[in-house]
Image (cartoon, rainbow, N blue to C red; front, side, top):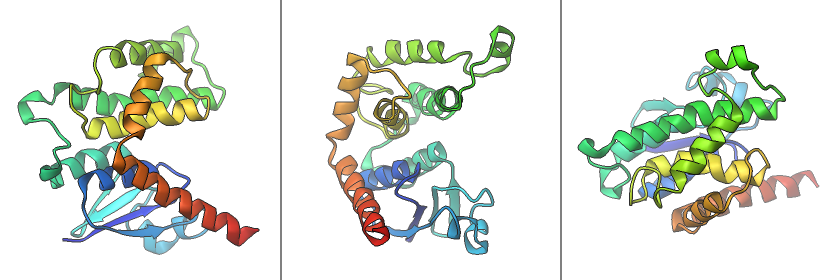
Length: 208
């Protein structure tokens, strides 16, 4: 089997790398830059959006971070990153809540847009404060978002929490901190971060 990750170390591709590291699968990496290769013909043939991450697994293309997490959990069942089918309600719910309302709310806030009362009826996330309240309530219930065990849902959902606090897009709360500490202590998270951080350092050294 072959698995290739298309990414940039300063992108959501870090989520996909973390997920791959959790599977334990061997993989190749193609680093793309924003100005040229990400919009080049070769990559656009893989992802017409010209965005990262994307993976190609045995000739099959998967894009979108949440989809990559869900796909890899199923493609490598031995890693135990998805609950049994009968127990996937919370798994699907919060994996895609992170890909929808959380990402929309954080992005809009970062861009300086806050929907008014009428617009909140149209916005799937309602408003930023509502999303934060939902996150606080949910994370306080259990150690991991889908249950008592870590899963692929935590890779995507947790990344939103970790990055949101790191860049000031989400407020800091004790429950958020404790959840983030559990995730960032994982060996796969550390391996993935070390790889991407080294790539960033090497790129910065070349520019110096």
